Length: 134
Image (cartoon, rainbow, N blue to C red):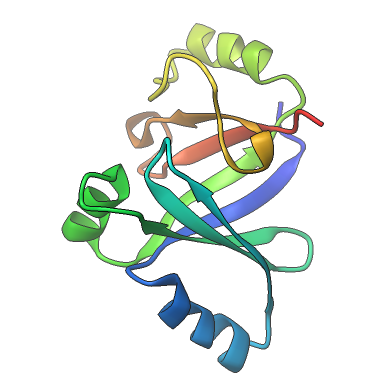
């Protein structure tokens, strides 16, 4: 069903402050910073070798990520898996009674189709599925 781990999303209060750790201390390289205004987040993509580390910060107080940070603080937000056919994967998951947070995919970074699975169905982990469209 999944091809590989695509990225690990880490919620941060400030991308610029967090980048100092990932770049200066760990020696990783930032590829780019993107904005997803529809989701109220800014994301820094860091090259993590075989996958990507995505630092995500809220763009305002109305971002769903703001609520996450207020409740849980900075840290791992989600693990994203790449899939070949997100709609078919969603159908398979529904048949297995896996709860989806969003009923249909939306466009995330790099115009990928994205859907999230409820942590209630995934042993407490927020899972993102993403499909490249290009």
